[in-house]
Amino acid sequence: MRKMYSLWYLGTGDDRYENMFRHYAWKYPDRVSANIYYSEEMSHKIYAAADAFLMPSLFEPCGLSQLMSLRYGTLPIVRETGGLCDTVESYNEFESKGTGFSFCKL
Image (cartoon, rainbow, N blue to C red; front, side):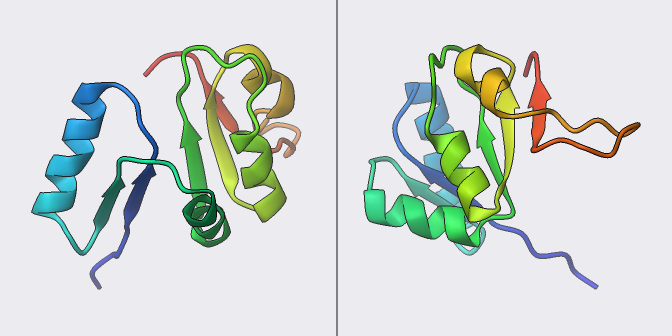
C-alpha cells in the first residue's frame, strides 16, 4: 500500500527556503503546495485540514500560529523559543501528557 502525504507552505521567509519549497512544488505538484504569500483565508483552511503544524521560528516573542493550530486540533511542532515554549507543552511520554512537540535545533 502506497502512503500518501502532502506538504503545504504558506507565508514568506528566507529566500533559500522559499526557493526550496518552490522547487518541491514544481517537482511534486500533487504533493507539495508552495504559497509564497500570506492569506488569512488560506491559513484557516490549512489549520483545519492539517495533521501537524511546524513552526521553526528562531525568535518568537508570543506567536499566535501555534495557538491557532491548537484551536483547530492540529498538533503543533515548535522550536523551544520565546512564547512558543510558553504556550506549547511538549509531550511527555512517561506522563502521557502535553499539547504538542518541541525541539531545540533543526
